[in-house]
Length: 375
Image (cartoon, rainbow, N blue to C red; front, side, top):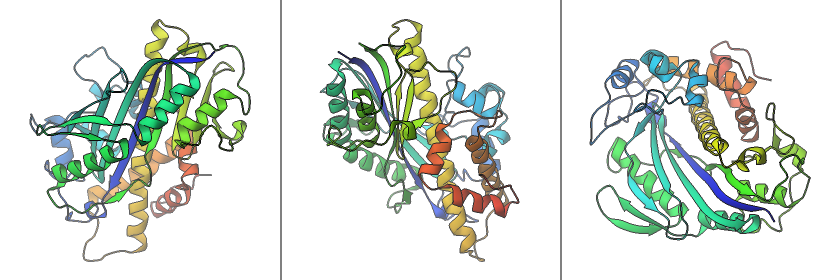
């Protein structure tokens, strides 16, 4: 029997604001204009202290720690990245958590993070479900967590409440928006649905040498961890070959499964080893989360840019800094899309762009700057 002992799930929400693109911006964050290279660079070099603290999205407290997503995305370790380069690559600031979340129904921690971009904000909630459950029961637990399970939340101000995941995300985004841009700030352009990453970190009962089979129990479980449908056990499955995201140099049992708004990581040769490979899957999950977050964020900026270029407002032109950001974002997305060696290489952003029908929009903006269209 296949059992899962540790499952990690990250939900990613992004909200962009057209009013941040104009010059001067009609919205302003509590730290200033993050779309200005001068103000961004100043914050990058001297992050504000608590209670309005900002940090970089990679680990800085332990110099030996290497965060591989940012290292490859930027082409160098974070400690060696100049602020101007971080600005052009749209590296977000990580902000203080808006609250503490616990799960009374499962062992394992919950982490709620906020990220701030020149064009909007993002919320990431990661749940670690640690239990000794058969595969189907673990997927049921995960779907319940995504839909109906209650989370206990203690907000930064001290108030407490119970929320389901959709309610928690809505309330947290409302609080972040108010915290960053001021009370009564209207909602921007939100993600249609969260993008999710689910990774089996530890499990048993699997042949790590056996290839995956179309329409077997594992295929159905991974589909459920991407679709989040309560009817996942009975749904018609996508063909396995069509939804397997390409991975390099992997055993035949390894599978990165993807639908338009989700990824499920199934790497038995790694999760069956309880030694050092366990931490490698935790790192892989984190890398894939950041790759998905950056793709989601930069594509959202391209959507705003296309609307802006198609409906120009002469009275509110773009600033030089924002114009440079749009050009750079189009370039970065191109590198992620083609798997350029100068950035983080994964087929997941390529599929994410195609599945969410962002390619035409990205190419529209790339054409504005004379960049070659992506195939």
